[in-house]
Image (cartoon, one colour):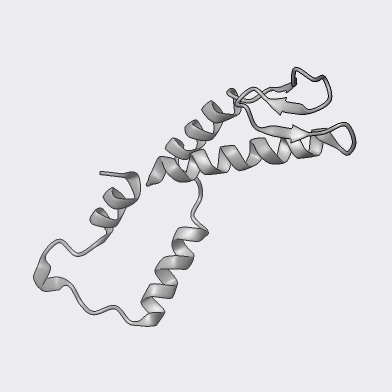
Length: 101
């Protein structure tokens, strides 16, 4: 069971007879609560582990910049550091999201 499923199970009514029909306000409130929740420890750990997997390297042709994971993150022109940081941040956020699924 994922973290999200476990937390949903614990937050719900204990007995099926207590379950009530949710209206749109309840659904919106639940969505907002999930989107604005503080990151849990598992998410922080997953993001930290993911960060350590990425380093910028040059490709064999010496022009393209690549990440150690294989993603091309820059070329001969442009701000390669920004492209690399954006790539790493995206990977960290994805790892944190997957940690709770």
